Structures are given as C-alpha cells and as structure tokens.
Length: 462
Ligand SMILES: Nc1ncnc2c1ncn2[C@@H]1O[C@H](COP(=O)(O)OP(=O)(O)OP(=O)(O)O)[C@@H](O)[C@H]1O
Ligand SMILES: [Mg+2]
Image (cartoon, rainbow, N blue to C red):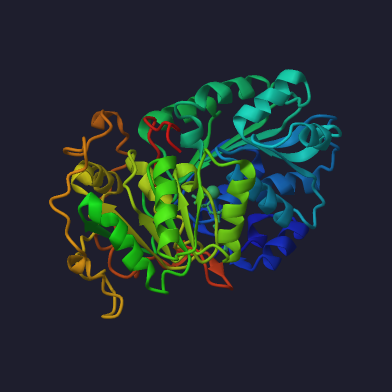
C-alpha cells in the first residue's frame, strides 16, 4: 500500500500529515497527488469524507515548499473556491494544519463579514486564498485582490460551482487568471452535463474517479421511514429521545422549515440550533461551532451545510424532508460516516416525496431499506416504533400530490452505471467497505461517500 512518502511529498508535509494522525493516503489521495505534483490539471471524484481536501492541498503546499517565491501584493499563489463560507473557513483551517511546517500564509475571503479586514489580509499577498465567488469578485472589482499571478486554482465541490448561479461568477474569476498554470476540480458528484463543462475548463485533465459518481458513503447505514407529513415531528422527537443520537444533523428543504424544526425541538427540551442562509454570519458560526464542540446536540440545516462540512463524530443524519435534487442526498448523508467512522442516515418520506425517493434511489443505484418498526442492524432497544406514533388522518401534504417537484429526469446525468456495489441498499451495517477505501486514521474516522450534484440545483431556499 502506498504511503505518503512514496507519493513524493516533501518532508515538512509528511510531518504535518503524521501529526494529523494520517498513516495511509486514501485512494483519491494516492491516485491524484502524483498528477498534481506533475502540474497536471485534475478532475477528481471520490465519495464524501475520503480526504479530497488533502488531495488538492498537499501538492499545493509541496509546490510552495519547493519554490519559496513571495506572493505579489494583493495576489495569491493558489486560489481555492468553495460554495459556502463555512466550507471556505474549514478548507483554510486545513491548509494551515497541513502547511504548518512549510510556513504558508492563508487568507479567507467570504461574504457576510466586513470587507476591510479582508483587504488588509490581502494587501501583502498570500500563498493560499480560500474564497467564495461573490465576495472575491467584489474585491477583484475594486482592485483589492488581483488574480493575474495565481498559479493554481481549485474548485472544490466543482459540480456545484459550475451549476446554475455559480457558473457566471466562476467564469469571470477564471478570466482574470491570465497566468494560471494548473486547474483542479474536485467533488463527490459530477452529473454528466456538468462533467462536460468541467472538462472544457480543464486542459488535458487527468480524470480520477475512485467510485462511480453519486456513490454514497460506504459506512453509512441508511433507512427510509414512509410517514405522513403530519407525523414527522413526533417521529423526530421520539428518535432524539434516544441518547445514541448524540450528534445529529437534520436537513430541511427550506430556511423557514429549519426554524420550525428548531422551535418544536426546543419545546421538547432538545438542544438544537439552525444554520441557513437567512441567519447572520455570527449566528451561522455559533451554530456550527456549537455543533462541533458538542454544545449543540442537533444542528438543523438547509443544504448550506450539505457539502464539504467535516464535523467529527456525527452519529446521525436525518433527512426530515428529502432534497429536491437527488445528488444532494448523497452530500447530506456524507456528513456522517467520514474518515472510516460509521454513521446512520434516516430519511423521512411523506406521500408527496415518493417521487423524490425514487430519484434518489435511481441516482445512487441502490434501494434504501424502508423501515417501519426496526432500523436495519438495530438492536431491540434501538427499534423505532413508528407504528406507535399517533396517527392524524391520511397525510397528504397540502399541494403535495405525487412528488416530482423538479422536472427533467432526462436532464440528470446518469454517470457510469454500475449496479449497487456491495449488497444493495446500504442498509445493512456497513460491512461493504473495501479495505483500501478507508482512511487509516488513528482516531478511527473515515470512509466515504460520493454523489453528484445536478445542474438543476438552485440556491433558492437555503
Ligand atoms: N489519509 C487520511 N487518513 C485518515 N484521515 C484522513 C486522511 N485524509 C483525510 N482524512 C480525514 O478525513 C476527513 C474527511 O476529509 P475531507 O473533508 O477532505 O473529505 P472530502 O472527501 O472532501 O469529503 P466531502 O465530499 O464531504 O467534502 C477529515 O476529517 C480528514 O481529516
Ligand atoms: Mg470536501
């Protein structure tokens, strides 16, 4: 098995990786780092939680270690673009951790906070800038940031970044990067039509796909509960009465929906906080920070927290409402079972969401076990007594009727079609993981999921 040293990474990087507790590169790391060190463009696809961040960051840091040029004033040598502020901050933290013995300067430029500190941070230039597109363009427009000397650009969550809403700003950003030498795109998902666009933007890329697109995290047990919309509330409260739901992420479709869930959880004396696009940046950071520290037991989120966010020890992901875009399911459930850890994902599916469920199963090429009373692999104590919950009439959601909130099935990429690898359904207890797939981390985390994101995705409600 490859180790980090045999990938050709410089000693200060090997030391940093060892102090992170990584002993073995994950498959995406082993397969992309050599191309990236050669300076090739790369399109890398691997499941959630399998270490894509280090895949692109370590070679950037290696470059800086070998070639210690100073960045130009207001410029950056490497630019990493991410879709959300929280993900940008997390990637910057990773860059600092992986780069601690190289001595790199790192800045974050995102919306929702003051411009002035960002202008100041960029005034002398930095090695690595991690940014969200909108705020970066503001600074480029005023001349506070220049991109003409940037050597490497990375699009993390690339499919999403090339999706509706982000494509125009991304094209504008790339047009400023005249000196750009290397383009790197990573994601867990890559719908076909986005993949073509990605390839147009890359020059003779090395394409590395560790698993078929839209493959869910390997060690996540999945279950779906078919339930009337009106009973979801009671089921959520009942599930959370179980202390094994120690760090639970609940996804809703809308910001309003997230607030409503927090309200009724608080009314049931369950410690919860919401994170979504209508919250102030301070409130967003407090919610995510509290969840990371363990002060907040239940984080209720829109898809703003679906991609990239790495919180250790998330025990459960609950899809309180199914996402409109099937690929989002893969990203959402990928917040658990990261870096070799196990986790459980439970979807609540009401009558109006059956079509969405079918789309998810088709996209992920697996059938999600339906449970009424018992979750797959659960002990007697863990049994969910769904059928005991009070019934309140036949629950069709107002205006619901049949599911397909989004059109264009044919629009979605089908990726490489491969039938459910490893024991259909992802339900049964997570033995499906091939050995080499799991990051070998001392504090036992890791595994994987992937997925893809459709170009139909809009940021609308989150
Ligand atoms: N080689 C490794 N060995 C052990 N743990 C690792 C290794 N590489 C990364 N990790 C850990 O795995 C976790 C997931 O890494 P990362 O966030 O980069 O995943 P990702 O592939 O980008 O996932 P997502 O698709 O959700 O963004 C992190 O906590 C990271 O510290
Ligand atoms: Mg990531």
